[in-house]
Length: 231
Image (cartoon, rainbow, N blue to C red; front, side):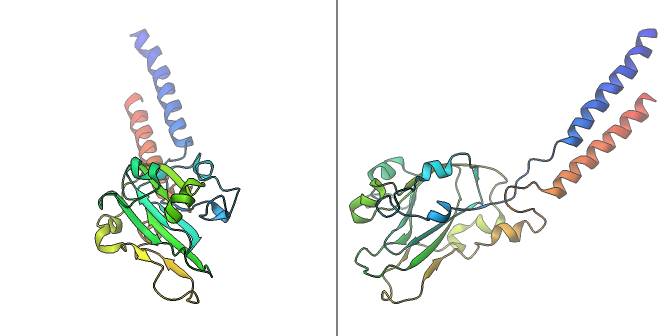
C-alpha cells in the first residue's frame, strides 16, 4: 500500500510532464505550397543564365501532393514533365508513353522575339518526378535545364485535383499566334486550389493553427481525466 501511494504521484507527475511537452510542440500539418522554380532566375538553361542550378534550388525543399511548381520562362524553352527516368536522362520525350510524360508547354525555337511564359504544374503523383526542356535536340536539357524531385504524400490531393483529366489543361503549344502576341500564362483551372481548399490555413511553410488547437484541446481533456483518476 505504501508503495502504491508513493508511485501514484510520481506517475501523475510523469504523465503531466509528457502532456506539457505535447502542448509545447506545434502541429506539423503543412499548407499546400506554390514553388517558383529557380526563384528569380526562372526556368532557363545555363547558356542563357549560367548561374542556374535546379537541383541546388530544390535541395532542402519538401514537395507534396497538391503543391504547384511555377515555371517562369519564355516561348523558346519548354516544360516537359515525366515519371520515366530513361526519358529524363535522354532529354527527349519523342518515344515516351502518354501515361508517364506530359508536355506542359511547347517551345518555338524559330521565334526571333521571345516573350514571357508562366506555366503552373500541379504535383499529382507520389515518388520521383522529372522536368526538363527538350528543345534544340536536348541542348537546353543537357545544359542544366532539368530538375528531379521526390513528391511525398503530405496532406494528399485536394478534391479539385483528384480528377486532373477533367480540370487540368493538356499540352499547350506556344506556336499559335505570332511573336507579337501578348505574354502567355499556362495555368490549370484549379491553380488557386491550395487557397480554396485551405481557407483557414496559414501561408506556405506555416502550421495549421486550427489543427494545432484541436490537438491542444484533446491533450487538456486527457490531463483533466488523469487528474480525476489519480485524485
